[in-house]
Amino acid sequence: MSVRKADLKDVHVVLSVINKSNAEAYRKIIPAEYFKEPIFTLDKLVKRFDEMTFYVYELEGKIVGVAALQIVSEDMGQARLVYILPEYQRRGIGTSLVTHIEAEAKRLGLKRLRVPYVDMNAYWAIKFYQKLGYEIVDKREKPWGYDFFFEKKL
Ligand SMILES: CC(C)(COP(=O)(O)OP(=O)(O)OC[C@H]1O[C@@H](n2cnc3c(N)ncnc32)[C@H](O)[C@@H]1OP(=O)(O)O)[C@@H](O)C(=O)NCCC(=O)NCCS
Image (cartoon, rainbow, N blue to C red; front, side, top):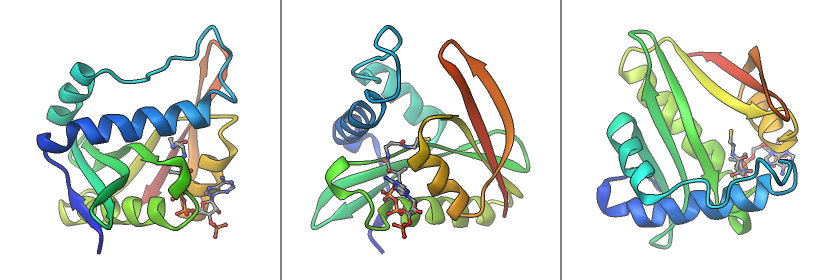
């Protein structure tokens, strides 16, 4: 298994993976006036490390993917910030990270996992979560369309 829990020492690499993966994927679908690059600053990400548990996927010692588990209630968790470096996508790494988070969530006694804010035009992410058994449970408007919220029973 190449998934491990991240700690604050990994924060710079995690930041770089998130920012690279986000820019490459979302530049294509978010109108320029709303597109933010980089999506995260170091300060903002350090705060997220306090709010959720980050996991990283390592390949030959290099972090190539990240994902986080956030507990939102006694029975529900959220999978957040699932980002794989562009050149390592489509090799099952995202599946390994989310599956790992699901197992952790289950171990903690959570009954459901939610994935919030999936852009309606991010067809790759929609297919990814549907293949993993997630269903759309909500749709929220934003200035350039809407986001889907996905959920899965654990
Ligand atoms: C979405 C993402 C995390 C998927 O990770 P990944 O490691 O590439 O995904 P996997 O290799 O585990 O793919 C599993 C399945 O998801 C679907 N999928 C993944 N990428 C896809 C793409 N670009 N186009 C269509 N389907 C895709 C496929 O069904 C795939 O199975 P298959 O390869 O057997 O057809 C990755 O594409 C990514 O980091 N994207 C940019 C950031 C992002 O959008 N994150 C999600 C935020 S909510």
